[in-house]
Length: 505
Image 1: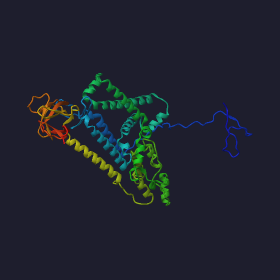
Image 2: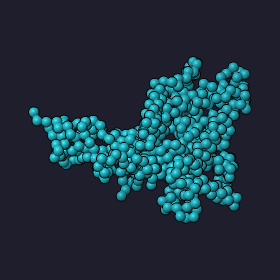
Image 3: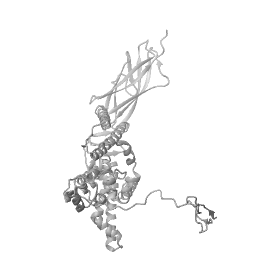
């Protein structure tokens, strides 16, 4: 249905779509097309660069990926009947092994502590050097760097890739694309395969995977991680950092003006001009910046931004633009670090002609460090003082107590002993806190020593009867069950109460 629309924005009050005499004309569409919810991806061709920060990134990549891919094959002798894989998440055996450390399911608080330490470490890194985690240690950055290296190896650097993509599809271009994607898939497949090796004996699982005898779940995880690695590191790249990852938004709320970030020094770089023009301006005594507007900082950026525009959400603080700018400054004979790690405070101080200041130690960095130290200290204490067995006790609910024919008061308990070692152990059981009492463990001969045995990696319950011959006991007396390992003399305790009738007044 046609609709009349009058445009009241013009001074003459002319109608939208009107004819020359001002008569309103029917308009079929009232609304302009809505803009897209997100910007279409612009393919980025990061140029290779050499320098200090690039070398640091290569070193981090080699170390982190080397650990991830090969750590499952490292062996660690834990004795007979124990897995010899150094790092293993053993779900069937309900264990997590990390070299000499063994974590049991009831010790989940260790993982809570590790999460707290990881969060505080990330906050501390952000307070000191901004998104340094994103630029060097984030898995997305590390694998993307590896995929970019493969891409350059097969298709050439930035210029060769852009020329090839702008040209027609030739047999050579198709072959190079196919080889690149094949290598990407191999790396992604190895990534998924390495992940599942942390959940089973690595050499055995590799053999089972190769012969088709591995669990279906292992193949499923490998396929899923192969696909995600291939897509995230090969195709989505900077889109993950810009749109999918929440850390840039969180980081912006946690940083302050003293945090070091990759920044362009406006006091040195402006006004921009070519090399010849800058030299001419200096000879004339006019201001001339060191920036020659070569755009090398933009060409090497993995997210495609211009750091000279100031702090931006897309910047991952990788420092590659610093290397690119340093190389140019060296060629034209100007001082390095026109782009470098700097704080917002120092940028403003330099513009004002004041000397820079460094303030790494401040309230937030000290607070983060103290939290890390405190949680780490608590975890270390808990690890060093923990027992290799646990004891728990439950009092009978009904009857709470029984008066025997000889006048003694009897309480019944269920004592549970958990042996966390992979070997059988013998324990001696005794009670403390209730004088003039005897204990009886159901299943042991009367008068025998109160020694019990618990199998390897097992828990066992014992029915324990405590008889008290104090004819005027309190209605509730604290009682302690004391359990001692007969070989190592390690001990543990469990507390409860001994119940008796109320004393008559």
